[in-house]
Image (tube, rainbow, N blue to C red; front, side, top):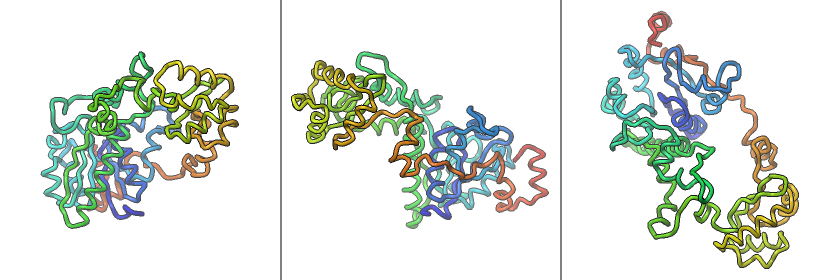
Length: 362
């Protein structure tokens, strides 16, 4: 696999960092979770639990290893520095300044291993007036302007069901930055420190929205180009309560939609901003159930798909064919399961390991 032979030390907790390192593990990297003795990653104990461990933890910690180290102790810090010597990447998610106060800041790690790539994932970044401020996905989306755009026209902002800032800004984008830094190292460069802000990431994902706004276009909640402004790009309620997505942006697709609805007279309403135009489509979709519309629209190349409930997703023929939700058997590490293996490589024998465990160092 492309990252076989790459070792990653993951000092993070909860979703963003774990998702980031899961992407690296899926590409073959050896990911070692460095967790606090006794408690470990908080997500281990987040319900729902199966066999005493969180299914959410399991979902984003496949094929990783776990070592426990008390980084508030000098011995624990020295053991981590020993691991850093043979690592390629270290990912941490503390507030700015915490690693420095622990004696594990970038200057120390870089001196110990000049080829190390260190990635710090935070809510607001390493500098600025909000750098030390606490927050979660909803706060970062609010600050980025994304939350204010989500919801019905005239209604309140609605939280997204997917943690975009956490997963996108705090997971995907750091992983991309790490891969770029590893390429630079393999080309003979030194390691580098990556400052990854979840809020910055969320703002970056609004590039098209900010461009339209700067050009003077109306950008408001429920009134954006791809958020319900046009009849050709909306979600319509069907008879019986189901929903259908229509995303016929190109004229040929909208023509196909009008043909499927047996309403060729609606062709000129594709980009109409008249609410009556939307109401006409709403009335038409309300005449059939979602499944009935699926039978009608299945034969047309029209960019229309039913809105699925979660329990329907795995049964969808495309999802099933790709094996996206196939049952996984990849092992998930127990807390500290690999401490002996990982620390042995750093020169810790069985007797010393027993002593370290007795004193709460590992």
